[in-house]
Length: 513
Image (cartoon, rainbow, N blue to C red; front, top):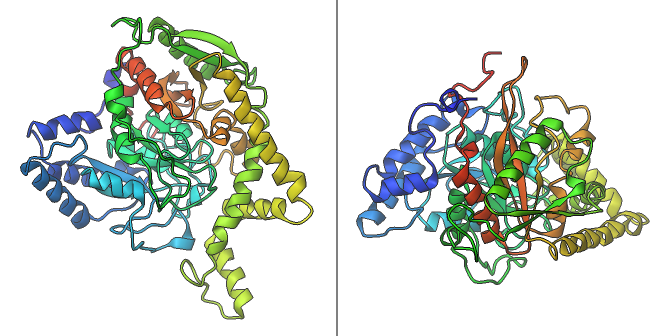
């Protein structure tokens, strides 16, 4: 697979760091970058990823960023365009969470993540499609239609942050925000061949992030490279008194930490001394052989960079699926009870008493997957079932976290595949939601434990007679608040390889099939 086949027109795929340098050197203005992004977002390569844009709103912010640079400001993100997953509320653009329930809703305030990137000077250019209320693994559950994978528009981009992953992979924007409850940053990043990191639970504020499962939801950046993600996470993270689950820790400059020397490391072996654990449960016999081989070649590259691979075990990996799909729906049933057609959200046009209003508004406003999870969650929280299901799931959640604690006594990072397969075709799992749930088996454990994890491009499953080459992601999991180490390892890998530089053709492979 030659890069010449995969690289579209020059300029479409400049990363955050590259755009930042161009702005600092005066080679381009924030307005020019914003206008170019708006043109792409409204063009044929959007593939269903874009839900809302407002040129006047974005260009006004770009002009303000240019004025700040003229006044002497030099921030790394100042003037760089960004798009937000439509789970973050924004004053300037509508917020729907991919649901008919919130169609047309405009928030009176910005989410903290949006607010902080705005303060850093980033220019919001779009709101991006996602699975409804972030519930899904393929971005097929949105009320506004599915998002398509830029590498093959007949395939899913992953979910629930599929719009964010597709927008970055297609060259619409250099960076986007995402959220990860059970893998919703890492899995779409893997399926679309980009880099995405879910930080430790509590690093990024959840204030203004529409809740799915409050003890699991976490915001994070999605971009072309670890360097770009480090720049964004440095601005996004930090304590927020408006979020009771926000961690009170000093702010970190993750970008500065990328090049921090390791003891005994050399230019050729920058990861010398780093121990990377390989859980045997992440490499089962059922793992797609192509995915296994692709991940193994990335692990071999990490070894060449000085890392040592060690065998470890996460024995409760399989239990993470039932544990997650009890706890997350239970929290969703509580969080989504506020959408009743009274104070805000969709209200049925049909008459009737108050109870009829509640029932009909929710029946019309929520999609099938959201209803399914609300019903599951309500059931497991009901009298007589709470102890049997929800309480037992919480106990197992603690045991899963303990398994990680044992692993990190023997290693510094954990590695494995992000998903058992590459992206599946649109509609393939529509009649079997359990199959989609099983696709989260490698991302759920870290989410349940609240650990940081990321997906790093690791190569491609080869093209066949019926499908183009599709990206495969390497998952890296760190100990609590070890985002800097995760990003450092990913950056070293990307300095030595070009997997993250590969790009789909401008029209998208398979677009005419």
